[in-house]
Every structure is written in structure tokens, then in C-alpha cells.
Length: 260
Image (cartoon, rainbow, N blue to C red; front, top):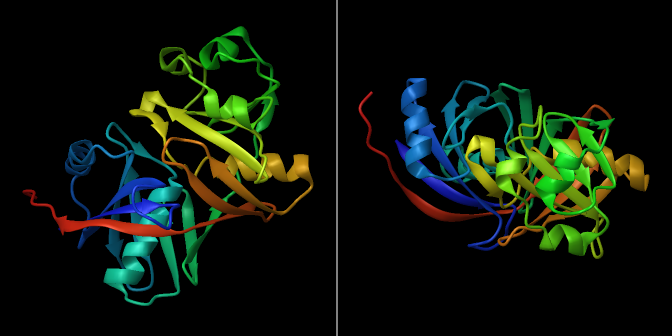
């Protein structure tokens, strides 16, 4: 199969979040796709099957299949427009989270995702021990969102990942604060899914966008994820949906050989 590695949410190599993209004629066995993702050892490997009017899309971490991934969707859209349907300006991906439209606007790929508005929960001692900092507020959707004091605190955070993995009901942890040169900043940790820290996370912004839209009273916002690689996301709150846009760069193109 054709295989690509794309640096998503970056306009240059070695920034953003690398995602693997595998182009298939038909689905492989789930065990095979999981083994490929583990072998690739990237935060996400996307598997794309072209249909008549859309593309089927699934995402695997090195340890498990997940229900929503932003950077690997952006990477898949990049590969579709460059190599599968050259010049395509609009595409629909059918996924476990429903139909995800992606529109290409210049060099930006704008994804249309379901909103995951978080609900406020109580701050616990375990949360503060896990992140090693005072927590102003805690909220929960698929992921746990912890609000910190400022951008510097988010940037310098050194969480205890063993404790993060023990946070109850938490698939992954988002830490966030209002930004300086942007509207908000964040970092994302999912040790239970084999991702100690994700460089730039589209799916977490399905939670971050409605959270910050209410707090800032803004629909359109710019966000940065403050990992070592870093990345910029252009965000819009659309009620029950969110739009997340970013750029991408090709790192690798090759072939994977497996037995069906």
C-alpha cells in the first residue's frame, strides 16, 4: 500500500504533528491495521479507502483504534488532494464520529467536526498532583480539560503521566489557558492510549473551541499547542459543530508491504 507521513498543523517540516496515512483498496483486518500503527509508532496512523462519493477513514494509535483524530484527518485530506484525487477542493470522510467534511482554502485545510462541549466537574487533589500545578477549573467531555492560570504555566508544565493515566473517566488530558499572542493555548496528554504528549491535537479542539468561545465571547479564534514541536490552529465555533483549520507538509512517501 502507499504510505505517507505528513506534518499536520505546520507549514514546514519538523513542526506540527506527524501522522501516517495508508491508502487502501479495501479494509485490512483490524489486527493488521493495529500492527501497522504500532510499527509506525506515530501518535496516529490513518487508513483511507476511496469510495464513489466519499472516503472511509479510521485512526489507530500504537495501542488502540480511536473515534476522532484531527491531525490525521488533516493529513489524510492533504494526501487525497496531492495523490489520490489531485486538486480536490472538498471531500467527505465517513468515520466513527460521523461524516467529517474537509474544505481546502488555499494552503489551509478546514475540517468540520462535531462539538464536544465539556461539563464542569469538581477539582480534585489527584488532578493537581497529576499536573503539578494549581487547577482553576475542571471540565469533562471525552477528554478531561483543566484550566490553568496562564500560558507560561501551560508551557512549563511537567505532569506525572502515571497519575494522569489514573484520572477517573479520562481518556486523555487537556491543559489550557488564555494565550498572549493568540486566543488560547493548550497541551494534550494521553498515556493510556500510548501517547505521552501529542504535539498538536485536532480532536481536543472539539472541546477547547466551545469552552473558549463561551469564555471569550468569540466565534473565531486562533490557538497554539505548546508542545516542543508546536502548531497553530484556526478555530471557529459553529454551535453544534466546530471548524478547525491548519496547514500541512509532506515528510515521507513510500510503500508498506504486508500479507493480507
